[in-house]
Length: 362
Image (cartoon, rainbow, N blue to C red; front, top):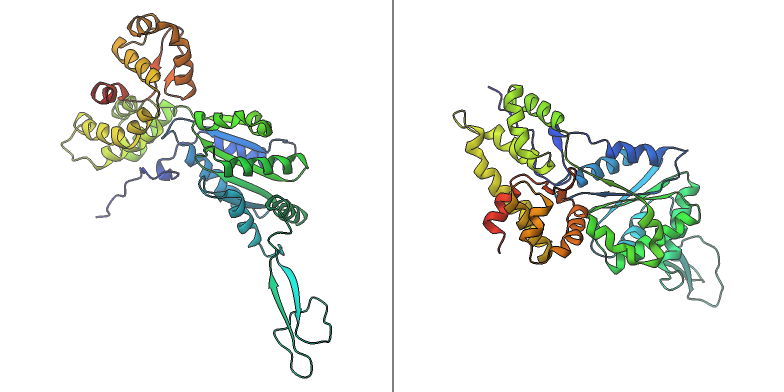
């Protein structure tokens, strides 16, 4: 009997067989590859576990497969500029070496022919070295991208889970300058909304602030139900019950699907919910909660206490009702709550109220 393989995954950036297309990757790919588009930068935002890295990975892999593109995915940590220069220097059409001639004779030597040693009356030695002080990093990077463009390559730089550092500000500033020069260099980043917003205070990064921001919202409930039916081989009624527990949250969709796939035959959906909550609390919600300010935490606690999230009731429970609108905006910007129904605030994460009930005072 063939053993079934779990189609769900919890590995960041990997969707696997359970992938539900949000069309975000397609929008970016179509824009970058269209001759009519003038968009060079995209920012993918969303709450932790919403699937940002999955869409990012789809774009990176698709354009890497296109012979017209040079794609460099950089770490958000470290010196991104030097890493990009190093990666570009590995391309065979880039000549990043300067030639230095050393002559150990009274006879002069010239030219660019490499000679390890000469026999006879003249001993000539030449070695290759880089003049590290002649070019700045920006001049070197600009030269390399220009060379790539001459060879008809478009250059895509990607950064997953970006955060504000001096090195990242430097990289973005250089990319912005090259875009203004008319070079074919593109930028794709993912990150939490608050982390991307931090770059807004930098005066020379206006291009980044104004770039298109695509938010990954909840997965479509009909798509989730259909996928559960297909992958778990269950009927629509049972699939809908599982879907309702996820609230469209991508990470919850994968976790709960995996747990249901591996459950015993005599177990029900209710039997696996405790394990589902344990995983969500540990791997996702703990980080989300720690990222909130004290004021934001208070508003979330009040939302949970009101049960239906009515704004008037939330304000009554707050120590300072006048600050409600400020924290409301911040929580919406962080994609933690929604205000789709006027006068109400709803938590977007499944079972997050349970987390707050147990761990909300820590």
